[in-house]
Structures are given as C-alpha cells and as structure tokens.
Amino acid sequence: MMVAMLLMLLGGFAQAQLTLDLAPEYYYWHEKDPQTGQKFLDESGFRMALEASYKQPKEQGWLWAARAKVYYGSVDYNGGAPDSSGAMSPFKATTRYRGALAEARYGYRAKLGQQYVIDTMFGAGVDYWFRDLPSSSDPSILSYDEYFLPIYLKAGFDINPRVEKGWIASVGIKAPVYTKQWIKSDLGSVTLNPTMRLSGYAQAGYQFTRHMSAIAFIDSYWFGKSDQVDAGFTSIQQPESYTYSIGLKLGWTF
Image (cartoon, rainbow, N blue to C red; front, side):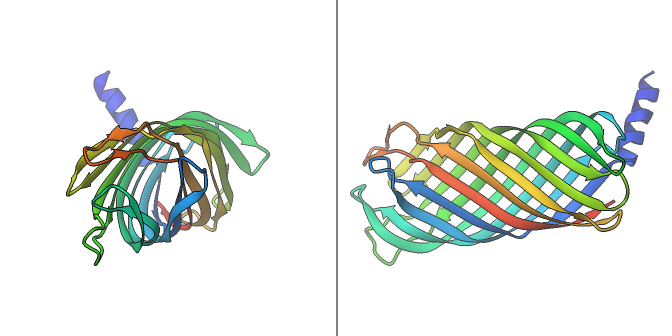
C-alpha cells in the first residue's frame, strides 16, 4: 500500500503545472503619522522577483497550489529618520530590500463554460523581508536595519483556460493575521507587532501557448499601527503602513 501511495504521489507531481516567472515590479510604501493621520514618509522604486508556482492540473474537484518567491531591489526613501535624541529629522536615501515568500492554497475547481475553469481558493503564507536605511553624512541621523515577518491568510478566485491558451485572472483579499517587526540600530533593538488590516490582490493576463504566459499583477499589505514600545532612548511605534507592488510576470510552464 505504501508503494502504491508513493507512485500515485510521484505521478501527480509528474503532471504538475509548474511555472517559473520573472517578475519585475514597482514597489510603493507609505506610513501615516499616528497623531495627524497624514502621510509622513514613503518609499518607491523598482524591484526584481523570481517566482515558482505549482497547481494541480485537474478538470474539476478539490486541488491544491503552492508558490515560492524571492525578491530584491533598491528604492527611494523620502521622509524622516530618528536622530540620536529619538526625534525625526527630514531624510532622503536609498533603501535596500531582500525578501522571500512561501504560500500554500487549497480549493475547489469548477467548469466555467466550455473554455475556462474557476477555482475558489483559500490559503496561508509567510513573507519575510529585510530592509536597511544607510547612514547619512549627518552623524546625528541613525542608520538602522528592519526585519518584517507577516503571516497572512488569503481567499479568492482564479480563472484559467481549459485549453493551452486563453485569459488568466485572479482576485481576492489578504489579511496579515500576525506580523512581527524587528528594528536594530546602534542605540539598541526593539520588537513591534503591527496590527491586521484587510487588503487585496489581483492579476490578469494571457496564456499564449502551453508554456508561455504574461500576467500583470497588483499585490498589497495594509498594517495597522503597533503599540508603543520603550526602546531605551525613546518610545517607538510603527504607524499605519500601506504597501503596493505592481508588476508583470513573464512565465514559462513546464
């Protein structure tokens, strides 16, 4: 029985729809002042991502999917940075990002006319990124490293062609149910927990052949403000934060 189950599993992977994507994206992040609610800093610029995704090739029924992604890039920072007294000073710089994501989904596939199928999918994922704010020529401005780890749930719908070519689309919502943030500087370290806000995701594109596809996408995270934490030299709070990624996936399916 164990041998039969192993053969069935290997057979399923042999038929898997494994896709590799090159995904350049435009990234935008902004934060709101906790007191006034107005935007007081933003980051924007281009990043590069490599993604691998898998989905079971079923005509109908229950199925699962997974994807993994790595990304990196440098974006423009426009806002403020803490000085040695803990006060925010105006500051412009380049912020470097490095990150990785892993996600699994499960759902049900139904026919949508003669040419398409629709998948109702639920999933969970973990994202982890590192960003560093380099030091300024002003010695009073602190450089720091920041690590974000959101664990999220998502739900949505995927539309895919039943044949070798056709339109592709997805839409859904995402909730970072638990987020941990570490900030490290020369003056010490602090751990924060931004709260959950619902956001969305969507994509649309075309499968040109059994192998080639191009898909435009938008993804987002919304975070509520964290509690205030004593960092030794000052009290720190992560404000409301909103991030968007808009890009194009150029994919090859095996």
